[in-house]
Image (cartoon, rainbow, N blue to C red; front, side, top):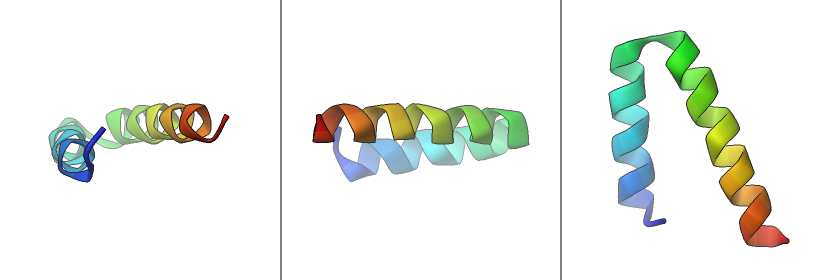
Length: 37
C-alpha cells in the first residue's frame, strides 16, 4: 500500500475521532507485520 493511501486513511480516521484512529493504528500494525513476515 502506497504511503499516500495510508496517509489518506489516517486523515479520514482523524475526522472520525480517536477510536477510529486506534483502529487505524491496529490495522497499520497488521499490515506492517504482514509485510515483514
